[in-house]
Amino acid sequence: MSGATLIVGLLAIFIVIFAVSGFKIIQQSETMIIERLGRYHKTLSSGINVILPIIDKPREMNWRYVVQGLDGRKYARFKTRTRIDLRETVYDFPKQNVITKDNVGVEINAIIYFQVMDPVKALYEINNLPDAIEKLTQTTLRNVIGELELDESLVSRDTINTKLRMILDEASNKWGVKVNRVEIQDINPPADIRNAMEKQMRAERDRRAAILEAEGMKQAKILEAQGFKESEINRAEGERQAKILDAEGKAQAIITVAQAEKEAIMQIAEAVANQKGDPVNYLIAMKYIDALKVIAEGQDNKVVYMPYEATGILSSIGGIKDLFKHA
Image (cartoon, rainbow, N blue to C red):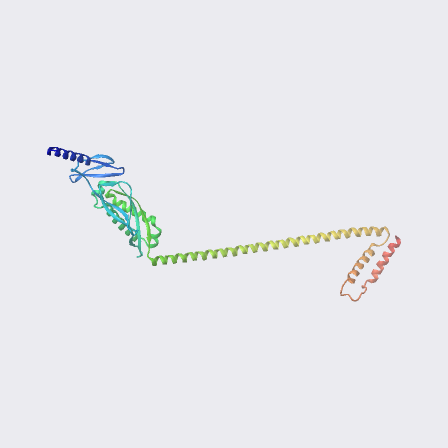
């Protein structure tokens, strides 16, 4: 092989390498910034793009990666790359200590969701975009938490997230970045503060339990009193109705007995009148006989005596005898 052939072969290889290096295939949702002789030339879109090797050169950009160490903790690593990811990116920042308005130090870690909207600004307006976003998020988080007391910071995560997003979005707009969301993962007060909060919560729960128990006992007493009241009312009403019914029954019995006696007297009077006798003597004699039966049946009676009007009885008996004679 002669020297001319070798030169031609090397030239052909160089041309092939030169031509191949001039083709750039950009994937979907990615882009590349091309500089020509050190100045911005153009932004490559997805697909096949042609550049001039040696003259045109991709601009490198720092990018942040999170790797997990052997101890299980996550660490941030920065690498340079020529392709810029246009998708939404998630940065999980490590925990940091912040001080609340009431001078309580807490540990907070946040997650930020952002997206590169203008790659040119992301490269030329800021030196290290991921590091700038991290530092901006940390300082903004300190400012926001510093305006709130501990209790407010624990229950106002939505408010904190909204404030962070607005501040970060406004500050990063110059860098061609859109901050979509900011989320607070954990807010960890010191151990003594957590113990005090747990005691406070326990005391609050005990207080609520005591109040509920007292309310329950009060309601039970009220219901018991109402039940007793209604029971007494019903009992009194029942007794009243019973007495009324008993009185009505006795009255009806007296009326019935009187009616029966009336009819009996009328029948006796009619029978006596037919025999031409006096029915009064008959009735008086019957009453006296009944009275004597009652007196004789007494357990404590020791002496049997005749009433003062015994002669009336005898005369009545004599009248009865006269009636039977006429019969």
